[in-house]
Image 1 (spheres, rainbow, N blue to C red):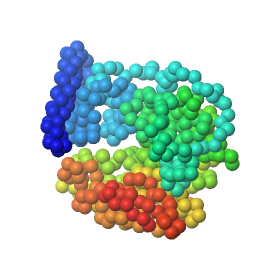
Image 2: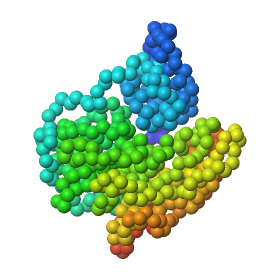
Image 3: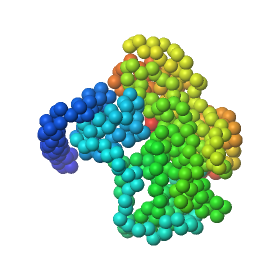
Image 4: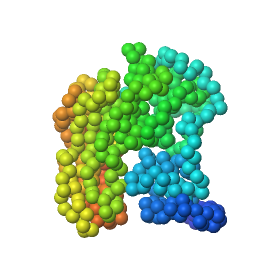
Length: 453
């Protein structure tokens, strides 16, 4: 009887969803229509509409399923839309717009003016149990993306949770991120403070007891990866390390939130840091990826010139120690069917946190696909590099001849001849042991396969 019941309910659920979506869309269009009539002679509104149609409408009106529709964009504050166009996920679309044009787009979409006087500092209605500026004294409980530098994400001996008592957990506090529609930065936890990043680039040090902010720091762009905390000999936090969506790496005082240094880690206009940084002794390792995979969907874009990289910085100074790219320098290759110059090899971004193998003095990183032809041997691969020099010691490619970019989803001219299959290594390699005590690296791929190396 189960399948029969399900088949009867499914159309009703779809109908209800359709009616709700239709109602919301009608309300939105009515409100926008009334607003448009009020500002028909408003040059900013008209210019915003024009720029939206040129730079944004194709994706946000159905071509890209993942893109929020206009009904959703209308609910955003205008400051959020401008930030996204300047240093967020839509920075590629925003490259061709002036700052005034970005504000006009936000005005057109939200019917609200960008507030020049909006403060970057949010106001909070609670008081932390710890006094702001009080010295932290307790060691980390979890650091970075993987809990430790091997990225195992497993602490079997350090938890009291079991299958019998997990159902007894109760909410102690919750923190809502201002000016955000998502949260992608995994927190770093101590018994005193929870450190985390956010969509608008704010770093928060929250009181572990009640969630109230002890301090905040404003980065230039969204912080997607987990923070990594450099500690003293007792394990007490000293320095917060992270990267942002504008391809900067930062060091911030863990006690006060004061900026210690800030370093640009890639000069490509579409470069970003999405993977979590990781550290060993005085070396910070930063993975580099990019938005060029999206830019390539434009027929007039000369695809592609970004190449993935690992960059090592001094934790003390922010000075670059070494840099290892995942492809050779891109060179002109062919003209696309639209007559646009193509470049290659390119891509092989590093989306996830690298993994440290201190015993072998190696750092492991998983790469993504090439963006353009020719595909090289370091895409969709695990790369092992020397921690001191960045020298490539060995590589293991899991999928050969994988070149893909956003043009391929639309059968557009910039799609390389390989046309995928787009099987990135999207998660961090895991350094662990098998049942015989042998060290292995476990790697998951977008293909759905898991490998042990």
